[in-house]
Image (cartoon, rainbow, N blue to C red; front, side, top):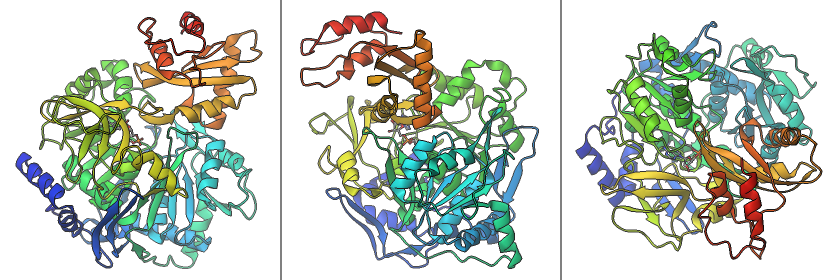
Length: 637
Ligand code: WTA
């Protein structure tokens, strides 16, 4: 299959960029011609950022799974769609060809239908990285049900919050998940979540770890048994449901600066076009290549660059169940050699962690199959970039540093492998269709180069967030109200003398810990659930591996004699309320917090102290009790 729209030179990039900005409707209409439509669209783009309202390809009818599966069957039917690599290298990998994957997706689509799942219903998926996870996601898309995948590291409380928000009546899970030498008891976490969710009708359980679990009659069903029922009626076909271009494809929850996670909504056509276009262009995908994105499907990176982007391009996508450091820190490299991976897409936190394990894990590794390397999720520091470039890419693989967000659906600012220039620690240039601009706090545009400010985007692109599920006003206030007529990213950014962009980190109260977004308000809420906590304030601090670590200042009533025991209690509370990914790295007990006379916590001061700064804390005169600052400095960890 050829991609007339794959950009192959710097000149072609400049031309495509110019066309896309001058005439977005014509540009994206031409791009959209490369997909299978049940009916072509009436209007390419309709938008205003005030409401906000964005509609791409309105009137068009399609199903994303026809684009990811059916259309490849004639040419690529016997080619691997998914290579699945298990947690334990001693177990065998699984290959699903496009034909086999389509068969399994149809089969599971029938299971869903058999259990009363209809178009538009929300289905929550809480599974480990097993092939059935991809099958479940695609089967939902096939029947037009809205999937909401929840990362396997989230707690029962987080799951029930999300189930309630989405009013999801169906859950697909596993008995357990393997992660290194641990087993995560997924089904039992779901059981706890369901105590607050009596509206859930069915839970389908896929067997993976053979962990003992309880099954509730009438509600809980085994995946295998349900498949058998479909087999028994001779595996009927499941024609792809006809979806409107703007029908919801999925909800994915993400942390924001207020306490409650937001259900980011993406729709069928625009998301598909964006995931595919960015995959093909950024990674410069060539037919037959193996693409290994190390993210979990519970995050947007997994949605767009394990499932929808690669499969819509007919690529072979590699799904890895385990973690980079088990059984040892050579696991990624072993997988690259074993499956002859062409494109490796991972996060700076993984690179830093593997870098810190030393070179011995690279000793017997060949890595010759690699052609393109990618980075995502957080700013990549110079040292990690150089290590990745020299030791993994052997100085011949371009590194694409891809900036984007759950809300953007796909990559926004990035070099294109070998086509546009790379520059370490810079995400470089915007992709076609993306008009970035930097503003100061008042929303005044910062013109010219060598400036830094808050990153906004001027116009809609096909993959832009459409709404936050069930609460459109929240979408408006968070993204479209800070600066009039602009999409606000929440990121700080600088533009160098050549117009390259470099992301400097979040400017709102959101931390980026190991490439995962965690809102400080959400964390504070979780910590404050502990009965002994009077008040807490969370800030980030620079962390060698995680990028940012979590620093908690806590006013606590009646400590244990051993402060560490109290710390353990608090960490437990966070794990129970959010999940282990949100555990604070440092907890400092304080007798007060630096507040202004109006009661606002001055986080700026706490941030500086967490960074190890004891002087130059700025103006303290507006503080209610300036003495508290010296006490906090003295007790700093
Ligand atoms: C950060 C992940 C620097 C940024 C795809 C953004 C990055 C947040 C990069 C979104 C990058 C993502 N360089 N920072 N290449 N990519 N970020 O929603 O702060 O999990 O706003 O999406 O990650 O995180 P999210």
